[in-house]
Length: 254
Image 1 (cartoon, rainbow, N blue to C red):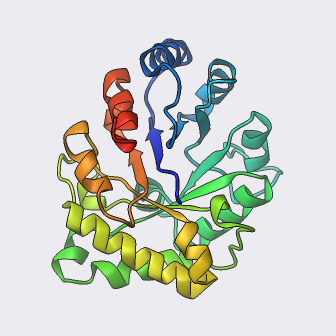
Image 2 (spheres, helix red, strand yellow; image 1 turned 45 degrees about the vertical axis):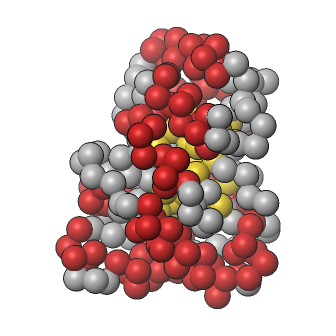
């Protein structure tokens, strides 16, 4: 049985002081993590020490939005997965569509980042997704499956709980557009099938596959209804305490 994961990607929002207030308000609003769901928050690097402090003992995990493909060294501006892990983080996003688009990160680099995350003891949340023109050509599934397998080259998680895949259709991120629940389920099923070919059926059956792309309380329950969708990588709706808490409740049917 896969435990749903609701992960909030704050992107480049909030100051450390704002984050401290948000964490406390969220924990008060949630009143504890409900049974049957995992909650994680993914703030920007300067906020990770605040997350470590304020979320300690709460049951809410946290992680980074990216990590370097290098362990250590003279790489100005980079952040090592080991530095993130030492703070107590659990997760690291790799291959987010914004990194792929604006920083031209290819799948080979994403695979190296995933490997570094695993070596440091983090769980990579590996993102894949297609642009609108790819979907309109009817090539969404082969594109995403190819991107996924290229991003997993040489990546060998020791167990299914050490890998999370996030499907984020690029055309639905921050646009207000959302893939239909059927679209999300079909792609999640294709992703799981590709994982089965890569790691075996048993492994693939336990890996969590998230949906990301303009998730809101109004559409989350329908997206989660598919048997292959195991939660959400949430952007804008994770910035407000009330909406993110509602998404957590929806993940367990409360």
